[in-house]
Amino acid sequence: MIRLIARALPFLLALVALPASAQTRAWLDRAEITYGETVALNISTDQPVAEIDYAPLRAQFDIGGQSVRRSYALVNGQARRTSVFSVGLRPRAPGLASVPVLRVGNASTAPLRLVVLEPAVQQASADADVFVETSVDALQPYVQQAVGVTVRLNYAVPLLSGQLELDPPARASLQRVGEDITYERLLGGRRYSVVERRFLLIPERSGPLLLAGARLNGITGGGFSGPMFDDDRRPLSAAAPDTRLQVRPIPPNAPQPWLPLHQLALRYLQAPTQAFAEQAAAIELELVADGATAAQVPVLELGALADAQVFAEPPRVEEQFVDGRPRTTVRRRFSLVPSKPGLLSVPGPRIRWWDAGSGSTRIATLPPLQLRVAAGANAAGAEAPPARAEEEANVEAPKDAASRPAGASPRSLDWKRALAWLLPLLLLLAALAVNAARRRRARIPAGTSPPSRGPAVAPPPSLDAALRSGDFGDIRRALAAQAGLQRDDFDTLLARLDDRTQVEALRRMQAARWGGGDLQAALQTLRAAFAGGAHWRPTKQGAQPLLPPLYPD
Image (cartoon, rainbow, N blue to C red; front, side, top):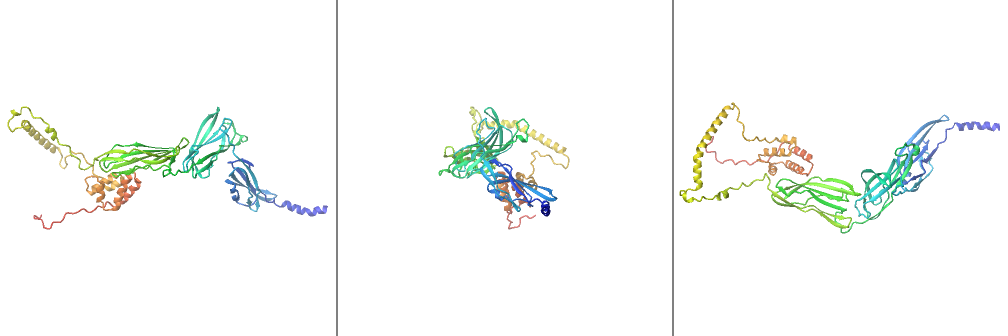
């Protein structure tokens, strides 16, 4: 026996000296979770691997954050390295989920099982510490109708962390709108904190539509005023009931483009009744669409006009969430430039839409504007004031006409008497004026000119200075001065230019000023076009005489 032990002792010592065999194992931090929560999968191994392939997990789980911890130790004089990989797993459906076998270097993990519970639906009552509510503004919407969805989280216990989610249904798009709203409410004498979150649901196909209830997965612990310890923390979950919708198809007699709404209102914010030819008059419209987003609202336009130009500014859009659904307000300003005097009728906007409440076609419109257009201040050929002939014709003759000399009218007799007194007075005033003028000239030093009595007229700016300043009015006046025009006539100015690039640059700048383009880009184009000066059409010279002058110099 002793001899046998002696023979086996070298083998036993050799086994003790060998390093520990490779070990790879996997475990979950919890065996049971609520749907919507995340569980941590941990894998410990001494295999020399840099990462693990988690592709087999994607069939049943959404993969979250990944991490790895590495440690080093000496075991029986041998170096041993251990790595612990961690990954977050979120089940895609409630029920029984399985974690498949994963390959780790030359080793493999054992399969694991996970129980995923349905979230508990808590009704809105004072007995519940937390409950979730989901409401929609239309249970029978039309295809492509904007449906407002409101989710409210009510909690009467402190939440250390939490995740409030609403899964998008099949055959519909769901997007979050705006920021969360927080407030408080009383229910059965118990105070709840409320987090309200809003979504926009747009069905893509007709038929039944299931909207799963919003759910909360969080952690609570301690009290609102008391201390919090790790032992007090516990998971908390709640869910709202599911909502079933019946989506209706687009009616065959519906107007196109398809615009389902609850209400559409139009109004004039600025509606003039008078205007001047070749001068801009401002018109401003407002559109309020109840039940539509800004992307669904049609463009706000004025009707076409034959005797006026219309320049539209970019619309101002405001989106709100009112009564549980979206509401869009659009305001747009137009500049109307009549081409001639007279009565101008401006047709109002006309928009066809579908009333989702009554299921019928409606038309939103505004009455036309009637503008009395007068001649502009710069119009040529202004009429002169009427003569006073009618006033002179109504002068009555004196009753003693028989007593005056023959051939003499009463007006001629009055003028003769007035001239007898005014002539000496006029001669005296003329002599005084001449004497005063001589005295003023005597007081002005030599080499100076007498001051001008009329108001000083500022000379037009140079073209280079006007281009540097960017003032389009100065640019036009400078060009008009170079062209020899008496006044700033834009059409005549364009006709005098001999460069098509310069003409197009001026027209682009004019359109940009009325809201028809980018003002800065138009100014840069104008500066580039006139960098080398203006190019004018040659003027016609007078014909040379065929004969020499009769009296040459």
